[in-house]
Length: 152
Ligand code: FES
Ligand code: FES
Image (cartoon, rainbow, N blue to C red):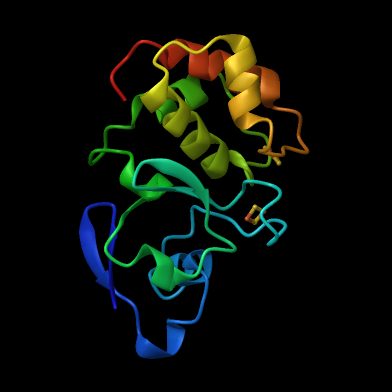
């Protein structure tokens, strides 16, 4: 089975074909940005894009994304140039422990691609199912506002 991750073909070893997308991303593929939080589809730490849609990878069988476009946080920067959302996250000093942040950024990216200038209520709604025990939600909102209207 072959996956398309961040524009690159990647092979899934036969013995890992029953695993979740998150398990395969983190090991053996070595893409550790998406995190295992709840493992139950509730926290958003494992969020990646599948065909552009914010998707929880912890419960998604890897076989379900065969032939589909998967984008992880590692696929956002262009070489040494950060993606505008990553830049905004730094400018607003959003992250605390950081555990939830890759999922938050992927959720924000999916939102901005369907709504270039979301209202605060729309930002809150889109990210409400992304839990952050460090209380970064206000800074996340400011970071998303910084990028609103830009091509992402
Ligand atoms: Fe996937 Fe929590 S680890 S939603
Ligand atoms: Fe720590 Fe969100 S920054 S859980």
